[in-house]
Image (cartoon, rainbow, N blue to C red; front, top):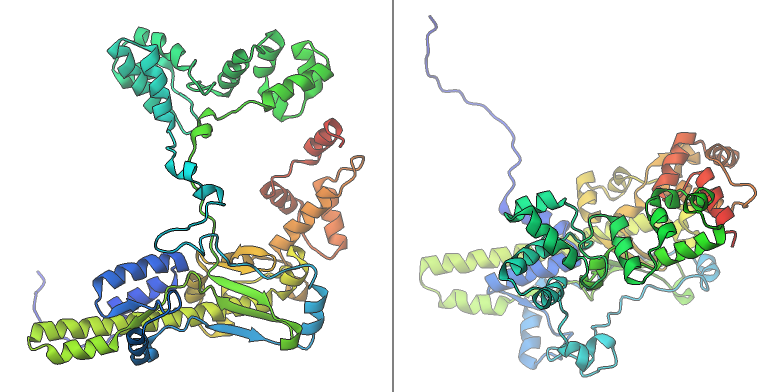
Length: 496
């Protein structure tokens, strides 16, 4: 039987304590400029000592200028930038003057103020577009449903079927399953469903692609026996086996080509006609520009001030309130808000400097890419950049996450420039540059000499790129390029 006893033991250990301020700084570091703007708006609503720096937007008054003078030391500098000159900078800038132009960070919303724009030249700002109401697919189908059916029970079942449509406009489930889900008889489903399939847009409510296309062809009076055979063998269309298809459909290859043209003119996703999703274009957090020759050439990198929120701490307001406050609780509150505001400004300052450090190193390492194209992209890792700027690898990862850079070659996510290496030492190449080379070889191949994966391996080996055949196949599939046999069929069927 063991004896249980209590005793005091003194030990010394080290722990990393994640304070709320440190957690906030890490969160701010990995935010994009757009996300940071939303975060700042929330902080402005909570902290009375924080205020927007609007002096650039609408000429500040004398009082505003005085307040911003007092808070000058706490204002985020919106002109953080870094540039460097190289011995051959002028020559490179000259060589590329006609190839690339500076990325334009201008926005079509630049002239929109608090009251909106007075210009109606842009399509989205015209009066009729502002007043119109975009009808949804559900409303469009329900309008037809109420005209077609008088029985309330049929209408309820029809509404249930409409609600079960997927994003493409299909009812993938069988009538039995639909009846079970809607809690009605199979006979009722079989009486309502055919009417749904006659609704506009044509093809809505189909169970699969074949039926969807058949409905649209029937609507155009093009669904004859050969077309039905063609729809039953759509897999052969994907494989480009047109001779076999013409035999199955009992038509000539010329007539088959016309039939395929009719099918290509159809809509495989009828619901897409009512798709009103607005695609959000990526907004650059960092801008890269070429420096003019009179400044020595080279590159300049700066934060995108158009999307970077600007805040300052109102020191004058804090001083006045602190003097007038007598209650200890109120004094503690105002001191906490001051500390929080100061920390936020410092965190944003550090974020700006870190982003510029990382972006500058990436540009310096990948300069050949910006000058000559993707085939000159070098292998690069987060560890490489972290070592150069003397920061932790996780910090670089946070900085490059979900952030974009506008360059003379287009808009890229910062993560794009980190690629694995093929080979070792000085001969190492980026996987992206090898992919680009493979695509170039395939795009330029002769119709009479389509390159197999083995031949591509041989060409790359001759160019000093050591690569396996299965790696070439993997890269080719990632580029969505077919095998040599598939490409040969496509080129023979479409010689132009």
